[in-house]
Length: 155
Image (cartoon, rainbow, N blue to C red; front, side, top):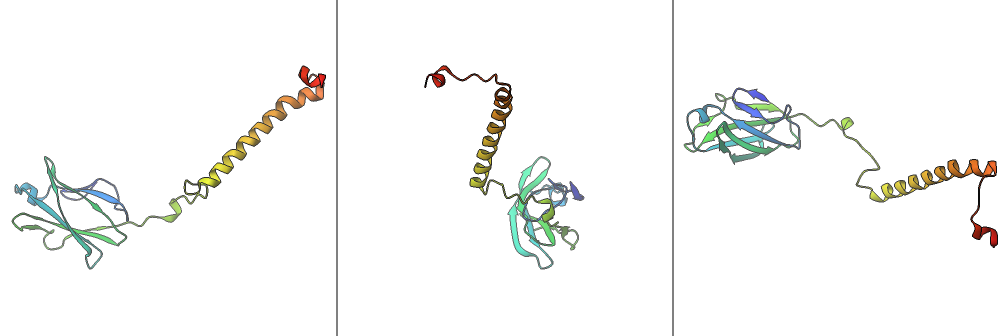
């Protein structure tokens, strides 16, 4: 997804507490810089400030950043000569979306609770076996066509 000219993300939306891969093919790449660093922070005050050296590829520079819970993801770029691409002093600012808890499944029978899963699985097997026996043998008992084994008769 391209949010700003020459800055691409590997996702449609920036979502809190997730990783995002950023591809940069802007001014510093076009000018032939050998090293580019992404300088980033979160929110109005650029909290959790970080800087990562980006990997050079044929299509631009790439890096992966862990997003935190914040309102915005702010970034700019610099090269090895300390030349900056900061969107003409405005920096690149992207909104970070919150995860909607209504979309996250809250299942009691999850893998966090294996004993409950095991018990429910065993009970479902027992119930299926009981239903099978009722369906198979009850009509035979009612009709009188049920044959006991010879050992049962002799005893």
